[in-house]
Image (cartoon, one colour):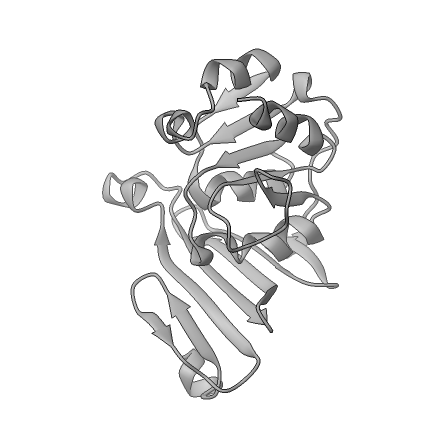
Length: 200
């Protein structure tokens, strides 16, 4: 459908690789984010789509078909959750935060003892993959620690989190979608969470 509507745009997909284009726009697509959840009938898998302009994510969509939820945003146009304005939570302290991660094992393989995260935060949950970031963008969780992401996993998250009033960076604190390890948050607990990650 994208190729029919925009034949000069490039497309980067997890399944289809790179289809080059001549325009400034490149689309990134992950048709099933959360494959393990999908295979096991857990309804938190997502379809991820982003549009990048000159390499910068400008619009993004997290669509959760089994839950009937869609979170979408475009730079300067706000973030919406099923058509309503989406905003991050108002939690100000890391000690009061609900923090998510896709995999404790993946976190610890990057040198982050989960016990340390648990000891500094109020709640910890395993609502992972893009669903965790959707929860942060809609104020239902305060932060998500997510190692091992690819471009098609993270590109939609940048406009979504920023337009919802939150923040997303790599673990160094850089808003760079070419990294692999990311934190999204409501912005208010971001710096404290990064310090916790860096102290490994």
